[in-house]
Image 1 (tube, rainbow, N blue to C red):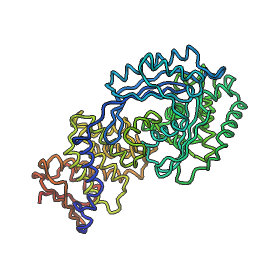
Image 2 (image 1 turned 180 degrees about the vertical axis):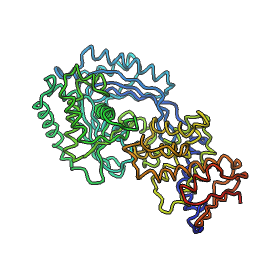
Image 3 (image 1 turned 120 degrees about the vertical axis):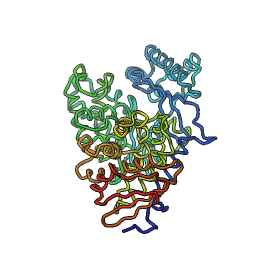
Image 4 (image 1 turned 135 degrees about the vertical axis):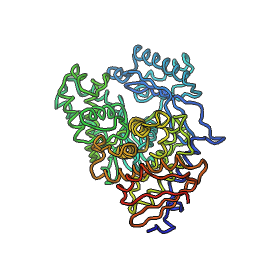
Length: 532
């Protein structure tokens, strides 16, 4: 029985988001006249524990593509423990790092460098003297940003690439902790506290390994300081977002302790019970034995326990069951502020991220990508009576990216795309969405592929929906390869009890021999395809 015309494929409702989205992806990648990408920009962040430079290509849609990056361990906050000024050795370490950072910025072609200093230099009596030396020796303007600014840019960077709406963001550095509130992806109140991981560890954890009493005193101090601003517990729909080296390293350790299908840290959900287990594990060992802990960074052995206790205490204050880890922060916030000081909607971030990934491959052609995306969405709407909108969106992204795999190897293109999706930094996606996108693409190329590699993000209840979506992706790809260039991205689907008849304008004569049996198994109807 044919679906009523108002809801049928090719109608405005059925083409809906994906037809417009595909065209927008094409527009972004083509970069219309007047919207060419700006010259690369370098962002230098001199923090209390480490310094870093990242060189970005800032796209017109605000997406940041990394061109170069480097990091240096500085340990500046440690100088402030005995006296409130930086030692000659610390200043020299900082200048050496800045020389290297400046060279990297020049080598990447950056026409603008944004250099900021945070907690340690902000608190040091001779911080301004260091800034003058940097200006004299390098011609670089290093700017000290306030705690509130650090919180703002940290929230702008950390939350931007996550699919979250409301909650609390914290950025735990070596010398300070920033906390920001956000609601409806609008940044609200912001605070900065002297609660950095290295600062806390030096102040409270003198034993090796640290005693339970020392950890309790550290936690009590965090509760007292944060308690002064009366943070309300998280609401039912709010989440806790964490960024900074400590929380990312905790997430890295947690990933190594479990079977988890995605290696990236951005978007990883770190449960409170697991944070507690990790802190207890680390606190039981002497510092010289911590190197044996899988995932622990070499230069965090002396601060990870103090930072972990601080994270765990904040989670308890807010009643947070987990923290959603962000792989981005102040540096990304500063770079993003060049185009906008507001947080875009997650869907817009995802579109920009997909477009940027596609643009990275010269062989990726926007025309077949847009056509295939529109076709697969029309098929999905026509054949799924109760469509899952998240699955629909991931299916569309898979169709958009498929040609990237072809640029590597035609015959294994589905597998290549599935691996790329898992391995790259796609922003705005939850880990379940990344797994869903990868699984659909992989299953499209191999219908016998199971979902075991995506546990625990996908389970047996996802098998049937993924198989159906993957069948449609394989079908849309077959159709797209056989349509004349410039064919309209429309398709008519006439459904009866036993048959699905697709009418595809511009289709060169084709009988779905290989995809036919698979389609029938997935949808319980025989597939018939014609040009008119």
